[in-house]
Length: 111
Image (cartoon, rainbow, N blue to C red; front, side, top):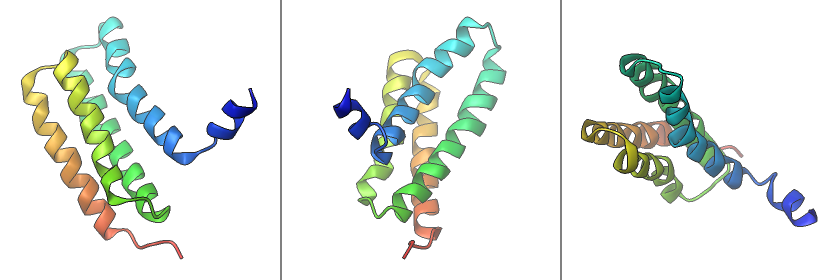
């Protein structure tokens, strides 16, 4: 139990868990709740996922993590698209990556 308490507050673990939850169970949950495809795409893929990308890019820059972490969310999303969604969603992977890089470069470093 003490090992879990040591690992849990680490920001990188929280970042990865949020990315996994947003990319895998949340779209499945909206599908099981019979939310229409258009509403699911708008709410998850065009509102929630870009917000996660923006927040994670700012966190990566401010915590002085390697810029390679910018690839984490788009890669996890690409896996979820490959596993579950339509092929046109691969365009969103590129959009998320571009958004992550733009926000990363625009964010000032925390001293």
